[in-house]
Length: 273
Ligand SMILES: [Zn+2]
Image (cartoon, rainbow, N blue to C red; front, side):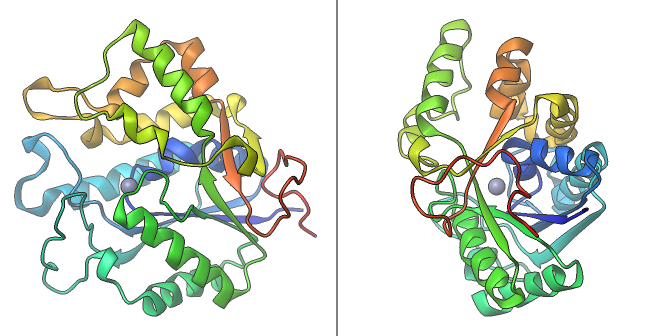
């Protein structure tokens, strides 16, 4: 029976790394897939050719739509908030909108719950309390996503994650063959995501790896930097293919409603009626 999956993310390009394989697989298996971003990502880093006059927001929404096409996503929505950025201080709100970290949580959750109800969503993909690696907008996704699912009565919330022990090992292995860009902070991964023991869902997406790469490639601005400096997304796309398939061929989620020690699920729609 076809189900509906909604992936809720903070910024365009967040869908590519942690959830695009699961989205592509669900779509390929005949389910309806919707993606919602809280912000248009206007404060993302990018080469200056992308950043004049607020152009980056429109570019990044276009990139998200291209990624969505590659994944078979049926609908793309923007919740209407502004990017809070990663800086030590949150910039003033742009005219007519609110930075997502300053959003009224009830209001933001109501906006998302309206879409969850309209789409009769069975599974919401959201984030962990630490937002994976600590971006304030990603932590806010966790808070807003959890409340929205409660308001809409969404049966399942899966928090996108990755086993941090595996990630650290893969990074150390990759670091032997090439240098990561300066912005890449290896030590941040020691505290990021979840321990393997907390993970409840491990989703095989190797058969959909071409769609996942296309999704990552769609975010051209996020692989760009002035003076040819390297970016994490670009570096990931240069990982030699066999290693890429190992690193990105699986995606992981935590369902906090399941008792600790539950058997690993291999399908995001497992146990649904
Ligand atoms: Zn993000």
